[in-house]
Amino acid sequence: MKIGFIGLGNLGRAMAQHLVAEGLDLTVWNRTINKAKGLAVNIAESPAALISKTDLVILNLSESTAVRAVLTGAKRLLEGEVPGKILLDTSTNHFDAVLDFREISAGHGLSYLEAPVMGSVVPALQGNLTILASGDEVAYQTALPILRKIGQTIHYFKTPGLATKMKLINNLCLGSFMATIAEAVVFGEAAGIEKEKVLEILANGAGNSTILTGKREKLLREDFAPHFSSAMIYKDLHYLQDLARALKRPLWTAGVPKELFGRAIARGE
Image: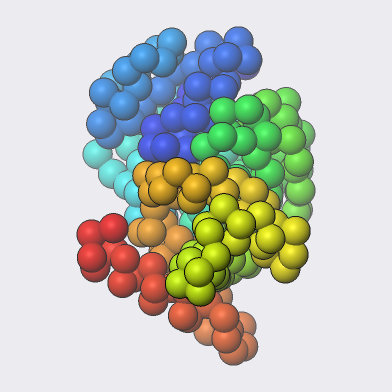
C-alpha cells in the first residue's frame, strides 16, 4: 500500500518520521514544504497529485478549515484520482465538519475515516499514540495495519462522528489538567515549596496523570516550547462548547481553561 501524508506540524512531522522509520515509502505534501526537510520522503506538488500517487492519505491538520481547504481548495485533493482510496483524517475537527467531509468524499468515491489521535510528539515518534476511529468498517479494516503503526491503542466506533466527539471530550480533561497543574506548581512555589518537590508530591497524589508525567521534565527545565499550542487547545474547547450547545447541556469546566488559553494567545504565547 502506497501512503501519502499531509500536514507536517509538530505532531504530523513526528508521525511521518515514525512511519518512515517503520520502513514505509511515504509521499508528503505540506503548505510550507520546507517542513519536510530532513525527512526521507517523496514530495508531491499538490494534494491532488499526492492522492493520485498513493492508496491511502493521512491528514494531520490544525483544524477543520484547513482540512476543508485541502479537500476543496486550489489543486484540491478531490481533483486527483480518488475512487476506491482512503482518506485517514487524524486532525481534531469540529464534530459537524467530519460528517460533511465524509459526505463530500463519498461523492467522489473516496472513503473518509475520522481518526483523531491522543498524545503528543514523543509518543508519536514512538508509534504510541491512542487513536479514536469512526467510519466505514471495510475502510477501517483496510487502514488498520497503518493505524497500528501510528498508535498503540485503537478504539473504533462504527457511527460516524463519535470518534471526534470523544476526542473533544478527552481534551476537556487535557485542557483542565494542564491549567490546574500549572496553577498548582505556581502556588506551591509561592508557598515556599521547591518546584521539584511540588511535582514529586503531585505525581504521588491527586495530580498523578499522563499529562503530569509527560510535562514534568519540561516544567523542571522551564522549557515552555510547545508540543501542543495554546491555539489548538483553545480551538478544541471551543468545538466542545459547540457540542454542549448542540446537546442542550451545561458544560461547567471547559469555560475557564478555554479563556485562560485565549488570554495566552492574546499575549502572543
